[in-house]
Length: 210
Ligand code: PCA
Image 1 (cartoon, rainbow, N blue to C red):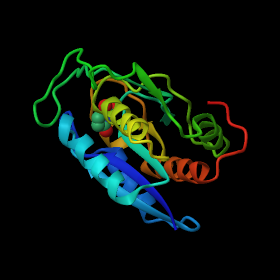
Image 2 (cartoon, protein in one colour; image 1 turned 45 degrees about the horizontal axis):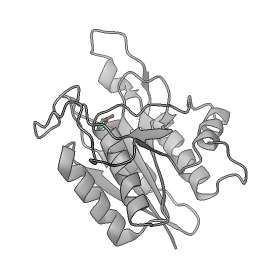
Image 3 (cartoon, rainbow, N blue to C red; image 1 turned 90 degrees about the horizontal axis):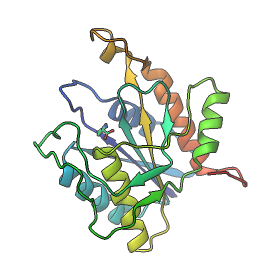
Image 4 (cartoon, rainbow, N blue to C red; image 1 turned 90 degrees about the vertical axis):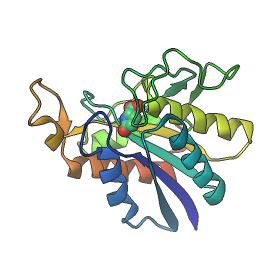
């Protein structure tokens, strides 16, 4: 069996839901040929999130790791190109941590690129009428920190996991009662997008342009 690990975050910033958990739970129940889809649900906490994710990676040794998170305000599903070595939290995390302009790993490289077929994922989603685009910034909050930390672990320990991060828009139920105009997507569309991202990651096209 091929092992795939999906990670997702609990709600944060006063929200009651996080599309990443809702979508990951749904996709983890689907069947993919010869593949076990494992799910790790993470707290929105600076240190514990990374510790829990890497502990699961050590035990599962996944061939593919797809990290999911919410980026409220995004219009499309965004496979992220790059993680950067900065913690700069606009708001405190769920444990009250709010680092401002600190490196994630002192003396670590400035950044890491996703090793998922990000352009092929975006293209496949669009083909299926799921709005998607490669994004060139995962921000400087916990999603970027998790993404950077996982890529650093892979680099330093020389494991062969292909890994990357995908940001998701708000769900409709998160925006209907907000005062400002915000983009949102249905859970069904997000689930279909994540399902297709898993499918493409399991059999990437031979030639990919990252
Ligand atoms: N999104 C946040 C962290 C948790 C989540 O789902 C982010 O984009 O950093």
